[in-house]
Length: 118
Ligand SMILES: [Zn+2]
Image (tube, rainbow, N blue to C red):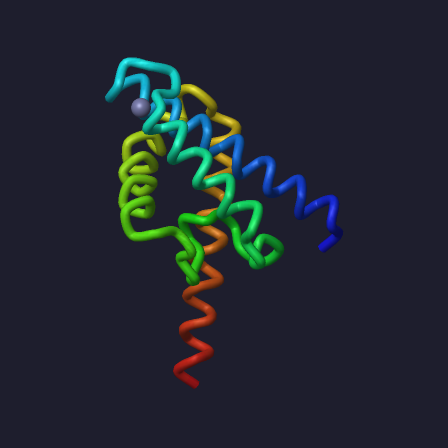
C-alpha cells in the first residue's frame, strides 16, 4: 500500500474514533469532548500514529497486537459499544463503511484460523 493511502487510513480512523467519543461524551458527560474523553482521544491518536500494522489491519479495535493499555482498551471498548449502533443514525456512511470492514476482517480471521489448523 502506498504511504499516502496509509496516511489517509490513519486520518479516517481518527475521525471515526473522534465521532464515537463525541457521541459517548455527549450522553455520559453532557459535553462535546470533556477533558477525560479528550485524553482518551489523544491516546487513540497516538496509538494510530505509531501503529506499524496500519496497512494490513482495519481498525485498532480489531488489532491482534492490542497496543492499547488495559485501562484505555476497556474505555475505548465501552465507547464503541455505546456509540457503534448510534453511528448508524448520526453518520450512516461512516458506520456502514466500518461495518463492512468489520465483516471483512472477521472473515479473514476465520480463514486464518482454518489455515492454522491445517
Ligand atoms: Zn466525556
